[in-house]
Amino acid sequence: MRVRAPAAALAAAVLVASSALAAVAFAGSHRSRPQLTVFAAASLTDVFPKIDPHGRYSFGGSNMLAAQIQQGLPADVFASANVGLPWQLHRKGLVTRPVVFTSNKLVIVLGHGNPRQIRSVQGLEKPGLRIVMAAAGVPVGDYTRKVLERLGLSDLVDKAVSQETDVREVLAKVVLGEADAGFVYATDARTVQGKVSLLGIPKSAQPQVLYAAAAVKSGRHLEAARTWIKRLLRRPAQRKLRAAGFLRIPR
Amino acid sequence: MFAAATVAFAFLLFPIVAIFARVSPGRLAAQLSHPVVTDALLLSLRTSAIAQALVLLLGTPAAYLLATRRFRGRSLAVVLVELPLVLPPAVAGIGLIAAFGRFGLLGGTLDALGVQLGLTQAAVVIAVAYVSSPFYVRQAIAAFEAVDPNLVAASRTLGAGRVRTFFRVVLPLARRGLAAGEALSFARGLGEFGATIMFAGSLQGVTQTLPLAIYAAFNVQPDGFTTALAMSALLVVVSGALLLALRVFLQWQPSRPTSRFLFAPSR
Image (cartoon, rainbow over all chains, first blue to last red):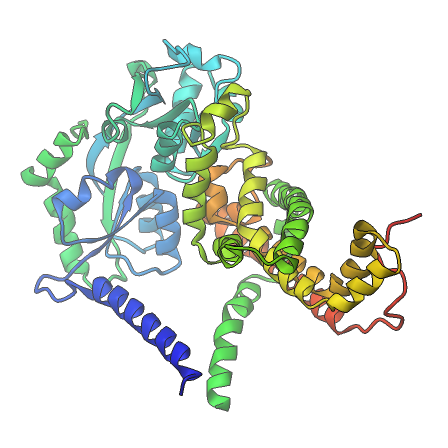
């Protein structure tokens, strides 16, 4: 018996640890309203739980989420930081007709206090500057390329020190000081106020950033998902989006 | 019991089979010539080679000391050396940023020296070395411990110095264990993802290793999944070959156990 004691203790420890995890994982799974699984763009990380605290969220690059939905991962709602991806899935018959629900704009985040003294977008050409952006295919990465093209700074794409998979990764690299400048949405920059400095992008170079949501047809709660998306357009949700810095849908 | 074994076997094998079943070998091979794939493969091999050289160079003496010396806090030292083995890679990534990042503990010192590690190839090497080294060191300690101290003593009494004894007696006797550990360390390093993407970022040809390229490709619509599958297949083949080579090596009995081996210094 003495030999077995450590093994039993270990087994008990593993059991306790795993059941604790399970308890946390399943807590709150009993609710009358169906709990929706929402795949949402990383830039919605802070605002969506404020709009619906009961949702189960998976935040990430919209393109990754689209790929996951295409591979059959169980989602009810897809909220993308562009219009193209949900329409792509819609044409494949995977999601309902996308609905535009908010808008955004791009800013450049710089290290706190702007230590590299960048005063304009042209200042990004400074040699040795470490710029991060999202990869092509990630909505914010595509917007970034559009901005740079309009500014005649497309060469910066090849000079980026990292091509991240979503906007929050870009933001983190600048907040942590690993990069000097990064292209993010204005709403992301607001979440780290006081930790970064901002550089505006001229209006003429701003792309049209539209967010679109669609219900996943294979989801278990299709009707609830449609309702959820409709609610995004109503005033309470719109007010929360506006409070987070998201913009009115342009006409 | 057989039923349980069958389930376990099927469970482990199924995802591997699925990788190869989803796409025809022809298409897989075609995807492999994609520059994203070749860049990632070369980068993975290069960073792994450097990281493993560091692991061998620094890990071997450390393992030898831990195996042969008895001192206060030795158990603690062993636990610390093995810790990255059980740490989630994300924790390793955060730790590396907190230590070597620009605002990390050593960040100021490194900055003063004009060195920035984050988002560079050096960061990949560090991440890979950090997460893979315990696989080697752990095995190396066991291998050195298994060397008969009488043989070492005999070598010393016959007039061989410490260094000579280490290279001519200890290393040849421990080499199987060392090789096994190194193979595992290499395989683990090749698959490193979490710490790398956090500390080194992801840039094709610079910091985007194969696992990162797989992740990036999966994110690309519409047919990135095929590219991701192709790269996954490549990693399965490489890792499998590594494991197989290790098995063969471990079962291979040298016919002349006292002959000069690869670790013997040339005269």
